[in-house]
Length: 303
Image (cartoon, rainbow, N blue to C red):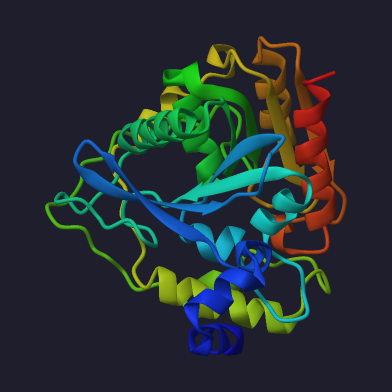
């Protein structure tokens, strides 16, 4: 925050002379993409002459900036910065009701609506960059990414599913939503709940994650028609797929991963386990291994 105040006081022409690299490394650019008339926030951290384009999707409770671009003084935690350093331009979208994307008039989100929103952002991003996109989803974002890739595969170059939480054989019951979304307040306890492995992240970083998460997402987004997840089928994913999980992630299941891996029809597939990682490995000491695994998979496809 001190850096931001200093930059505001600097004349605009001097800011331009300082160079785009510093600002690019620390601040995201927000874009608004219209999805069937609804504004979707899409955050950009691009570099010159990138090797490729990655689109990130967040999980169930928190939006993209706390998850993927956490800035803590003296620590390197931003996944977006990490992918930039490896030569990739990175974008991250907020689903309806998260971060910079408002709820729509229904107050709810659904898996199929969200999958279509992802496809619209992918189409916008592909047209903007002239490339197919590497789609990367975390937790619920991996479920939504799977649905989007299954239903709208045309702009996807590869798919990464990290922290994929569906147990083998799970079936979601058809739900009957209430007339009004509850919009329950989020809590600090919930924001800290994924950090399970001792000494894998500093208390300072946890505190900053909690602060940014509660600021970005003060109310928990409401979902219905989650039986639409029952349509998820690995055999319907035509693109290369990376499955990734933390060793101590309580939300992932090896038998489910094995079942999904065996169903994937594209021979370009990998299953990676991050030693000492948990559900929040992207923000912990396993972050480097996670970035390596993600980029190595993408570049392995080019060989």
